[in-house]
Length: 384
Image: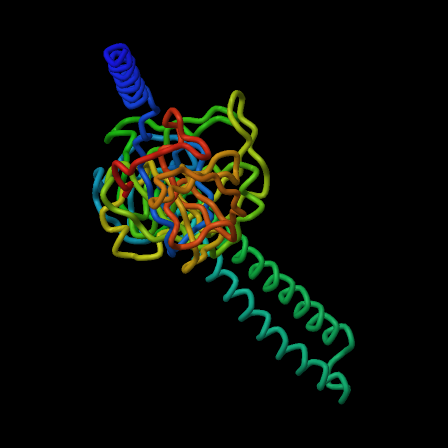
């Protein structure tokens, strides 16, 4: 009998040990968690471009002569710096120059004839006045006095006609000089020659209506640049001129530039298979930043709509459904779900208005299998 009891005790111990062993190795293991402490910091609400923006020069002129002709002078080359008023290109214009010279000499002759006619008019005026005085004393007849007065009036009309002819001659000279100016391209502002389409002795023709042709000279002012970028129509109403912005360029990935909104488009751009956008222009705020820029660089802008400099914040990736977060409690080693009231948010951080304390630690890897309210967890790392 004692031996049977002993066997039963042995069996109970074996089964109990097996149960403990099975429970130990089959119980749920704590979930490996990555946490981030709730902290105070800056949270910004921003608006970014939906497609790549473009760096544009504040002033860019694609110049072509007003008339067609053969290139006679081309004193500049691509890459040259030019100043306002400098000659860039001139067409053959000897015929106009000769015509202008001839018209100028003709105007001088008309001026001389006008002076002679007006001088005769002055002499005739004195004679007419003298005859009128003599007629009053009955020294001369009425016919002689009347002839002198009439001659004075006729010569006066000749003087007036001669003066009008002078004005017409000078106007003709101005017209010829205006046509002469159409054969020359002058720099409208200081800049750099970006492109030249044409060589000496080649013919250039003005662009026909509705048919764009390459400009003879492309002039760029490389001292001032801005970024034109499309912003989603949802964000556009929040943007105002003067708002602070950040600019990043693909050509300089490690550098960020300060900017300021200078213009917001007045209509929505609707392009096929793309979201509706509004074009926004952002200028560079520091002149030194523009020294290495080139027109045409691709760029991205981030416009600061709201800034909260000292507020509770958590990583945006830790939030589910807009207001759910998981908090890790180290003492029991357990995950707890909490409902928060979020504020301003961006891709990196979300402002927490209520629901969390700055001593809490939120779970960042919420997509980890098994992360739920009441689950056991162990911290394997802290996100940066």
